[in-house]
Image 1 (spheres, rainbow, N blue to C red):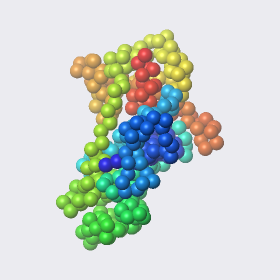
Image 2: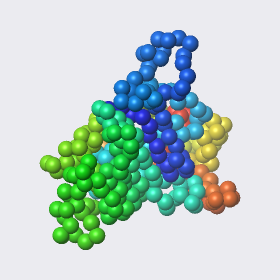
Image 3: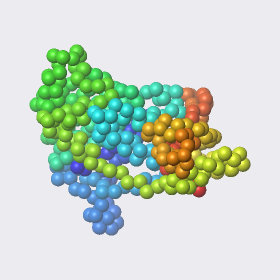
Length: 318
């Protein structure tokens, strides 16, 4: 499998659709070895080749870590949407705009397996899937293998994606309007879990095989900084330090919550007194919210460790 590009929108700190493109530019390096060692040639399409690696640079809190977080969310939803009904809780829209806070998020991956280019994506919020699609380019022209609108499959390629048509046919007599899966499960993942979904299983298995390694974060330093928020003088110093780092944070607060109250919270388990106490401290950051005219509407509170960038978390630890 070769990744060509990953796109996402209305997720985390990103309001508009962003794309991480792994295609090479139409330029040559001064040192030929760089092009040879860092480029994957495409035997199927001579006009497209791919980078083996890419570095992302930017200011702190500019969204670098949220690109990776969006990719992880995309992969986990594909892996688990059939068996985990709460997996969509990972979807966090851009909450600093009234235009997007209640709108679905967008995810799409363009990738190659063997000689075929696939484009797969979906739109969803934390409760249901609004749209899902799979396109393929096996012989020069991109074809829609299936298109989903909410609970209905509105288009399907019976020749190239017969397994999808088979599933629709199997359930058509028992369900009205092609409602053949849960509102919060993916059509592609559903087919891949069945014995006849060979192509779907191949696609899902390839995407699910992607693993992301993260070397940032120190739980001890984070715990110490969190405890310092109980002291007003230290709290002011920490907030001023984060503001100096241009993080966009207006305030920090802590709340005592039950240990098991937030299932996806990375802070869970880092409290050294967790075995003795039934509560732990949850850190919440506050930012300004704006409308479509960029007028400040109100403040929006976020679980700090779940929503802030890796750079902001590192500044907090320091």
